[in-house]
Length: 250
Length: 324
Image (cartoon, rainbow over all chains, first blue to last red; front, side, top):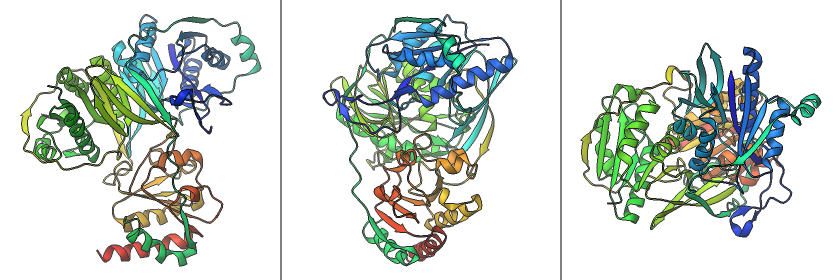
């Protein structure tokens, strides 16, 4: 199969953030950036599908500044065949604009399957995969925690609120990948060496008009320090009293 | 007129709380831009009877689409039905629920409109709608300016509180737009039929590894039952172990919840978990380790053995509820 995986480079989610850029960006000093977690699952799914199903091709795409090339190389060191970098100057918060740039690139690619992470850590908006599918006129399954492909059709499991859902769909299709589906492999030394020779193409991203812009970023207010009501079951009557009279939630 | 179209999400023949939240937010936006609120409801036959309830929360008009296909989320049909009507509106408002996450970007792409997702506040001025959205797993509040004649806005569940703004709405029954459902739902695996959804429950009782074994979740379920209006959640450690279904996971990669009361039982408070529940109004933590990070975010902490504290709390809550 010919599989495209669209990935994103995001800061380590365990980081402590500070605001920089005159209050409209995070301060990137000292932050570690890498492939977004969900994008990593999507790469692994693509590799496993082609390993299982025989000869195929996997291509990784990313919209981002030059630094995203390191992440594209990482995808290739995991086993992806080639990479396309759609260049922008800084982070883009307009999901539809990013989708337009990706769709313009993907539409003539002849892909059987186009994978995304279910969302990216930084924008946390779950927009780009679905909007790209819509722009390409392809069926789209979001948040797949299982995915099987057989004779031109896909079957996926989605976790929805309080339930699971099994869906079937024809290829070509777009699927966004949830966690738990596959553990991303570490690049082997051989993979890292091979990735250096794999093709990485860079071109400007065709975003079109950007209509969602960051005005400000701030850290959320800290929760005021709480109190320890007491030790063991003896604390229960006081806890219940506080829930009734102070918090008024009981 | 700069009217606001709102998708009042339903399940079966009931409007969901997130649907009412969306109508309330749409009302505020419509008042700011001087327009009307038009609500669109898509559900199986029987949903029409709920249209008047949307007037209660401020809808001036309700478009009701009764169709057997809407017994489940018929993604392509509902997207086509909304998009067909949305073109001349100032904004389309919908919940950032499982449905809305999927539906919002479809609408934005169909309408070539900008979209802001998972927002917790919004205001309008001229051709700009300004919204706040917690990004970076709730660690950074991002203020976004959305420009253009039409915007798609999806709202974080529980960030807006349904407010009454009663009127008698005009109702109009509409037919679903033609669309081919290429993604076929083969099976719905009901994890918890009839139980409150984590996104809607006023109280959540959540269990962590401190419960030591899956069967001990009975303690958590009993406490939830004592509250009567509680759903049961779990940490990632617990769902990774298979003690609880993945759909119960609260945290950065699971559900993000903002209930009135969150009771953390045997949960240490890893960053991954805190990202999913730190916006709860009141947090109670019960843990035997006084140094557990959960106590840093908890309003009320009890240091102790969950096997001793939780049953006592369950009895006390049951007593307190009896008094009401």
